[in-house]
Image 1 (tube, rainbow, N blue to C red):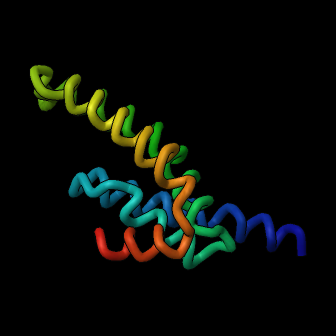
Image 2 (cartoon, helix red, strand yellow; image 1 turned 90 degrees about the horizontal axis):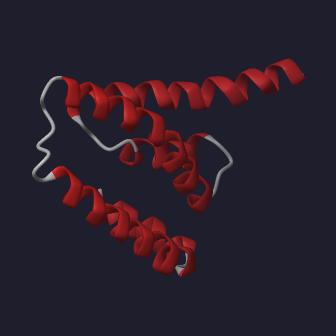
Length: 115
């Protein structure tokens, strides 16, 4: 039984990651658009846990994608630093200042509306 639980704990998230990574690499679709709903539907995670887990899991693919595109000359360095700084500040305020103090149901509906 513990072997079955272990496989379930590994296969479901790995499958979600594989699918979202493929779509992110192919279309540039943000992983959170796929990962957050999938984690809330296919695991026992609540919205906050799915969001935090998704952000953590997307760090490495974001670095790999950035390096790959930078090496190909596909990163507009005249724009990327300002975009990154704006995203950093926006993520801080959206996550820490507002998101952690917003009712989970409200977040779910907001996320659904955004999609």
